[in-house]
Image 1 (cartoon, rainbow, N blue to C red):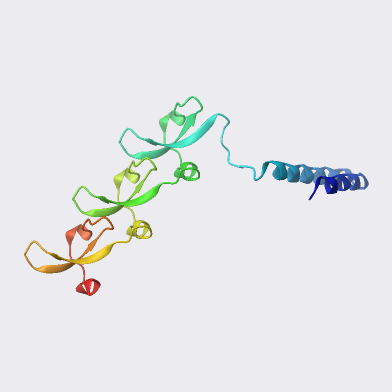
Image 2 (cartoon, rainbow, N blue to C red):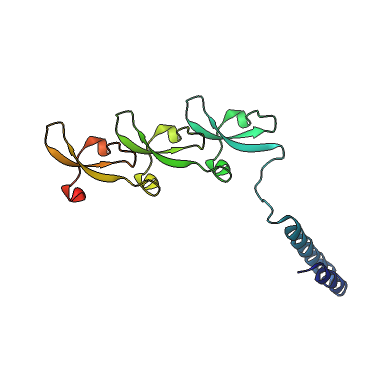
Length: 167
C-alpha cells in the first residue's frame, strides 16, 4: 500500500460510523508503523534492560536480565532461557563427564555448561557432530565395538555396544 492509497482510504473514512472509523484509522496507523519500522517486537522487555547469558554462583550458565548499567535484575534470579536464546542461542557439544566418558551438554555461547552440568539427549549433539562406532580393546584384552563421540570420547559409560554397529 502506497502513501497515496492511504490518503484515499482516509478520505473514505468520513462516510463510516464513528466506532468503525476509529478501528479503521487504527489499522491504517498500525500498517504505516509496520511499513516504516518493519516488524515490531511485541516482547514485554522493559526499556533500559536486556537479557544475556551469565555464570551463576554455582559455575553454570544461566540467562539473566540486566539493567542498562550492567547490574543484574530480579534479585539475581535466572530468567527463562527463551529471552537469551532469541538473540544469542546456546549450543550442544560433546564433553567429558565426571566419570571420564563422553556425553552431550548444552552450553552458553561463552562456553558455560547449562542445566547444572547434567548431560542432555545425545540427539542434540548427533545433529551437528555425529558419534561413530569403532572397534576397541576392552579392559579384559578382548576386542569390542564401542560408540564414541564426534570428538573421540567413549560413550555409554565405556560399555561396548552390539558388534552389528561396527560391521
